[in-house]
Length: 124
Image 1 (tube, one colour):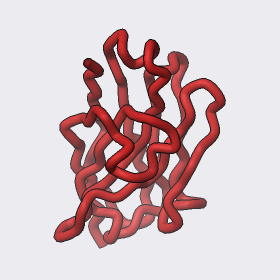
Image 2 (cartoon, rainbow, N blue to C red):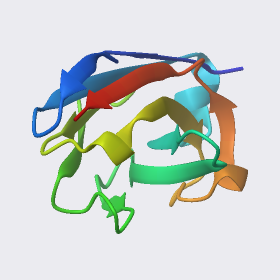
Image 3 (cartoon, rainbow, N blue to C red):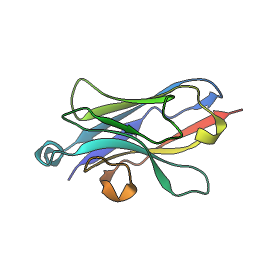
Protein backbone atom coordinates (compact mmCIF):
# COMPACT_ATOMS: atom_id res chain seq x y z
CA UNK A 1 0.00 0.00 0.00
CA UNK A 2 1.10 3.60 -0.70
CA UNK A 3 -0.20 6.50 1.38
CA UNK A 4 -0.38 9.80 -0.47
CA UNK A 5 -0.90 13.15 1.20
CA UNK A 6 -1.20 16.58 -0.35
CA UNK A 7 -0.93 19.97 1.29
CA UNK A 8 -0.78 23.64 0.41
CA UNK A 9 -4.25 24.41 -0.86
CA UNK A 10 -5.46 27.92 -0.15
CA UNK A 11 -7.69 30.76 -1.28
CA UNK A 12 -5.81 33.28 -3.45
CA UNK A 13 -6.50 36.15 -5.82
CA UNK A 14 -6.36 35.80 -9.57
CA UNK A 15 -2.82 36.21 -10.87
CA UNK A 16 -1.21 35.02 -7.66
CA UNK A 17 0.92 31.92 -7.17
CA UNK A 18 0.59 28.86 -4.97
CA UNK A 19 2.69 25.75 -4.42
CA UNK A 20 1.21 22.38 -3.52
CA UNK A 21 3.21 19.59 -1.90
CA UNK A 22 2.77 15.83 -2.03
CA UNK A 23 4.41 13.00 -0.14
CA UNK A 24 4.03 9.30 -0.95
CA UNK A 25 4.83 6.83 1.82
CA UNK A 26 5.11 3.07 1.71
CA UNK A 27 7.61 0.48 0.55
CA UNK A 28 5.49 -0.31 -2.50
CA UNK A 29 6.19 3.13 -3.92
CA UNK A 30 9.85 2.49 -4.60
CA UNK A 31 9.50 -1.26 -5.06
CA UNK A 32 7.05 -0.78 -7.93
CA UNK A 33 8.74 2.23 -9.52
CA UNK A 34 5.64 4.36 -9.22
CA UNK A 35 5.57 7.94 -10.41
CA UNK A 36 3.63 10.86 -8.95
CA UNK A 37 1.19 13.17 -10.62
CA UNK A 38 -1.34 15.89 -9.94
CA UNK A 39 -4.98 15.78 -10.91
CA UNK A 40 -7.79 18.19 -10.22
CA UNK A 41 -11.53 18.12 -10.07
CA UNK A 42 -13.19 21.36 -11.05
CA UNK A 43 -16.76 22.10 -9.95
CA UNK A 44 -19.18 20.04 -12.01
CA UNK A 45 -16.42 18.20 -13.86
CA UNK A 46 -14.70 14.86 -13.61
CA UNK A 47 -11.15 14.39 -12.41
CA UNK A 48 -8.54 15.54 -14.93
CA UNK A 49 -4.77 15.32 -15.16
CA UNK A 50 -2.69 18.40 -14.46
CA UNK A 51 0.94 17.26 -14.49
CA UNK A 52 3.13 14.26 -13.78
CA UNK A 53 6.79 13.44 -13.34
CA UNK A 54 8.73 10.22 -13.91
CA UNK A 55 10.28 9.33 -10.57
CA UNK A 56 13.68 8.23 -11.86
CA UNK A 57 14.09 10.08 -15.15
CA UNK A 58 12.23 13.24 -14.07
CA UNK A 59 10.45 13.52 -17.40
CA UNK A 60 7.39 15.73 -17.03
CA UNK A 61 3.97 15.99 -18.65
CA UNK A 62 1.47 18.83 -18.52
CA UNK A 63 -2.14 19.30 -19.46
CA UNK A 64 -2.58 21.91 -22.17
CA UNK A 65 -4.52 24.29 -19.97
CA UNK A 66 -1.72 24.63 -17.43
CA UNK A 67 1.42 24.34 -19.55
CA UNK A 68 3.58 27.39 -19.06
CA UNK A 69 1.84 28.34 -15.81
CA UNK A 70 2.29 25.23 -13.65
CA UNK A 71 5.54 23.40 -12.93
CA UNK A 72 5.91 19.97 -11.35
CA UNK A 73 9.18 19.27 -9.59
CA UNK A 74 10.63 16.53 -7.47
CA UNK A 75 11.77 17.23 -3.94
CA UNK A 76 14.96 16.21 -2.22
CA UNK A 77 13.56 12.68 -2.07
CA UNK A 78 11.92 10.83 -4.93
CA UNK A 79 8.69 10.38 -2.98
CA UNK A 80 8.09 14.14 -2.75
CA UNK A 81 6.73 16.35 -5.52
CA UNK A 82 5.60 19.94 -5.75
CA UNK A 83 3.22 21.72 -8.06
CA UNK A 84 4.14 25.35 -8.50
CA UNK A 85 1.17 27.25 -9.87
CA UNK A 86 1.57 30.77 -11.22
CA UNK A 87 -0.85 33.12 -12.93
CA UNK A 88 -3.77 31.42 -11.24
CA UNK A 89 -7.20 31.97 -12.76
CA UNK A 90 -10.67 31.58 -11.28
CA UNK A 91 -11.18 28.58 -13.57
CA UNK A 92 -8.33 26.81 -11.78
CA UNK A 93 -10.56 26.60 -8.69
CA UNK A 94 -11.09 23.02 -7.58
CA UNK A 95 -9.83 20.14 -5.52
CA UNK A 96 -6.29 19.09 -6.37
CA UNK A 97 -5.24 15.49 -5.86
CA UNK A 98 -1.84 13.87 -5.85
CA UNK A 99 -1.66 10.31 -7.09
CA UNK A 100 0.89 7.52 -7.33
CA UNK A 101 0.79 5.16 -10.26
CA UNK A 102 2.26 4.12 -13.57
CA UNK A 103 3.93 6.70 -15.78
CA UNK A 104 2.86 8.75 -17.72
CA UNK A 105 0.08 9.06 -15.16
CA UNK A 106 -1.96 11.51 -17.24
CA UNK A 107 -5.32 9.75 -17.03
CA UNK A 108 -7.12 8.87 -13.80
CA UNK A 109 -7.06 5.18 -14.72
CA UNK A 110 -3.27 5.11 -14.40
CA UNK A 111 -3.45 6.25 -10.78
CA UNK A 112 -3.34 3.47 -8.20
CA UNK A 113 -3.25 5.47 -4.98
CA UNK A 114 -4.86 8.83 -4.30
CA UNK A 115 -4.44 11.48 -1.67
CA UNK A 116 -7.52 12.99 -0.01
CA UNK A 117 -7.21 16.24 -1.98
CA UNK A 118 -6.51 19.86 -1.16
CA UNK A 119 -8.76 22.78 -2.08
CA UNK A 120 -7.54 25.61 -4.29
CA UNK A 121 -9.80 28.64 -4.65
CA UNK A 122 -8.92 31.48 -6.99
CA UNK A 123 -10.95 34.65 -6.50
CA UNK A 124 -11.50 37.14 -9.28
